[in-house]
Length: 466
Image (cartoon, rainbow, N blue to C red):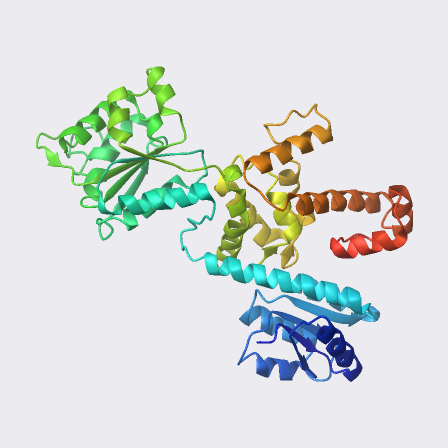
């Protein structure tokens, strides 16, 4: 299959690309019209498309729309004359990977094509790995161990305590434990014990008889009955009131319970999974949680790692959330640039996977183009201060601590990623300071005009030209 498709009705442009791509050993295919390329799309899928914007017949924008509809992950580079820059901007906003202004430097064009090929290959890899419909994904060793534990528990009804910070996906783990158990055909019922008032929680869990209290006009089944034969997930178990801890312990001990106001014991045929973001051992020491209940729940513990300890999973998770949001919102499919992903890996993620999911939701709605760079991220996210760092320290100390954390987490490719982040910040700030005047910015930075022009292209920087 041809990696790169060149679409242009100008034979001389096709000839230049032909000779250059042969020299670079890049597999390619040439088309003289958008219609010809559209016909080929019914038989094969390219990795990258480079198309002129103005051609006889259908335009490059028509082809771009078709590719975005059928193959939204195929990067498309639009070629345009200087007089068509407004059209190029429109193409960029409608999902083009990048545009080439004619006349262009062929070496710069090849470099851009190679970047697009890399992006296409990376997205194919992520798509192959993003098969879990619930978003329970992970290639990090810590998540692989969680998956192995779920597999080992698939044939048992053992009570499981799931621990981890808020936003790490504890309920997803509980759902996976249920789905892979022998109870999967029966109900999975979840209740957050911290979100229900204490006076109502007993009735929510165990149900009540008619007339058992003011307002109890009918008999009501509780969550234990609703989950009969299946799984009951008790979230935020650490906040359960003391008197209900006693009732829960009794159910776990002898398997029976009473509805509120009831006299006949009911059999609790459920598997109980519990979760908390709190340190239950500490709450036991403080007298806030029953020690015997803790030991009854803590038969098997699954510790869900925070996102900052599995940063290699950020691209995989981000790709999944962006795909899901595009489908849910009937919106354009977005993707993070490599620079943006490198930046995301440096964040602390105090909200963990839920924070990443919320960011992807915001990006799907608010980011202007198909490829989301650092500059497209929300300001409050970019300005978020890592609570583990002292804001009074200099930037060198902060960078050193960030490197230490990344190394500790097993990250690789730090030199390239952090260097690009540093260069991008340095050059973009200088360009902002000079209102986009490249020569002036280069002089302030102490680099040559050719160097800054090359870096602007390599780092995909945008700025207002003055």
